[in-house]
Amino acid sequence: MLITVEDCWLQLVQGDITLQEVDAIANAANERLAGGGGVDGAIHRAAGPTLMEETSREYPDGCPTGEAVATSAGSLTAQFVFHTVGPVWRGGGAGEEQLLRGCYRSCLELAVDHELQSVAFPAISTGVFGYPIDLAAEASLDEVRQFLETHRRPSLVRFVLWSEGNFGAYARVLEEMVS
Ligand code: AR6
Image 1: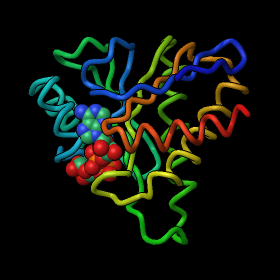
Image 2: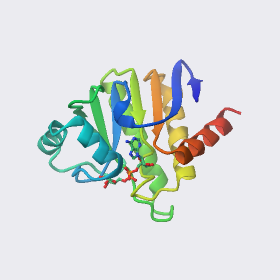
Image 3: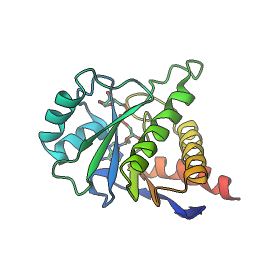
Image 4: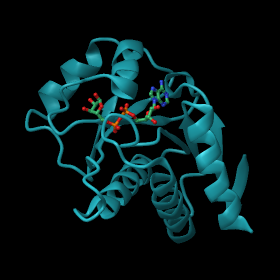
């Protein structure tokens, strides 16, 4: 599914983020940037050990929740990995939405700073961190749309949803958004 926002593309695909041919991919990391399971594990496995060497060297204090840091991307086709830390879902009253929005905004700011054309995102926080998928879809698609409306770049933002269910949830929200 693909829509335009100003002169940019906002796209949803189902698939594996490590295989995307884009300038940067976002990683759903933890505050220590210590690696882990889920998409974080997949990205580190596909990128190789240089990714962890670089995060440890450049960001020994990790990354706060809602923010993002950039590294190179090892063996991946992307040039950069943006490590961002989503909130753990605690019922919705602990600032989760603003923190999740912050993840997307921070990564898009890094993309603009590095003059990149394309960025791919997973559904941050919706796995181990337990953020409900429908609410995550609403917040993340709205934040990305607002960013593209304001900044008119990067040219392509792609959400890469791992499961059919997650793809469906994002597609429903995006359809609602354009109708
Ligand atoms: N490509 C795209 N999406 C994927 C892939 C993939 N290869 N693999 C999983 N997903 P999670 P979180 C989806 O748990 O909730 C880690 O241990 C998955 O279906 O990876 O932000 C970190 O180190 C889900 O919808 O991230 C942190 O400690 C989404 O990615 C913690 O988990 C996010 O699930 C972060 O938890």
